[in-house]
Structures are given as C-alpha cells and as structure tokens.
Amino acid sequence: MGEPRRIRKKYTTPRHLWHRARLEEEKALKKEYGCKNMREIWRMRAILRKFRNQARKLIGITGEQAEKEKKELLGKLHRLGLLEEGKDSLDDVLALTLKDVMERRLQTLVFRKGIAKTLREARQLITHGHIYVDGRKVTSPNYLVLKEEENKIYKVS
Image 1 (cartoon, rainbow, N blue to C red):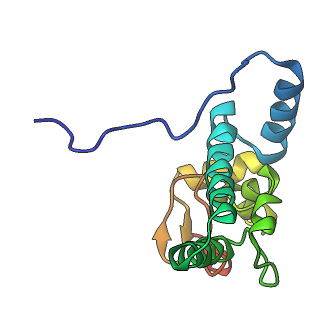
Image 2 (cartoon, rainbow, N blue to C red):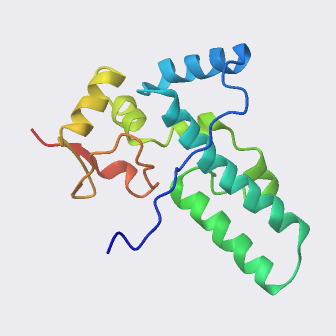
C-alpha cells in the first residue's frame, strides 16, 4: 500500500550553489559547529526561515487569532531557548540569526558543557547512543534542545 505520509526535504538548496561568499560563510559555520555537510546548515537555515516567515506574517495581521498565534510562536521560541525571557516582540524573532539556532543543537551543547572534548567527539557520542536528554536516548546531533532539557543532558557509558 505504501507509506501514508509524503516524504519531503526539510531544507532548500541555495539558488546559486557555487557562490563564493556563501560557500566561505557556510564553510566557517561547518567548522565552528562541527557539521558533517552543508545540508545540516541548510536545514537549520530552513528552521530559522520558517520562524521568521511566520513572524512576518503575524506582524501584518491583527485580530484575536493573530494574537493567539503570536503568543504560541513566542512561547515556542522561549521553550527552545532562542529568545530570552525579556524579549517578547516579533521584531526580536526577526533579529534571530543562524548562529542562534546552531547554538541550540545537541552536538554544540554537549561540547559546550564539557561532556566531549571536541565537536567531533560530541557528534560520535551522540550517534553511538551515549548521550541521553531527559532520560531519552537521542541519536541525532541536530536535535534542538529545549531550555528545560538543557540541564538534563548526560553521558551514559
């Protein structure tokens, strides 16, 4: 019968693949955050784009439903740790950068907390199943860690 859901790409490729400035910027990001390939950067960029497009849409409309959606968007970004508690406007959502999203990845947090000595070691620990988040084994280095889960990251040998 087949799979009931349609499988889609979670990223979009750049319009001009061989643009030098973009390549250099992505190469630096890849090295700084220990990404395996450019696709991981494009995926994080797509997540950021989705949040920013939603904020742009909500700035333009008013009403009860718009306020509800605005509150939900800001709540989600606070839970993810992308926005601090004092920042409660859609302009703050538009000011988010790719580095803000990359800092919330599990691989980055495992390295920053000192569980792993290098980003490569952090990635290996995660993919081999040695890292648990809030009692659950997470094997994806691109997992976006919630603010409340940040203190519940630990290594199991």
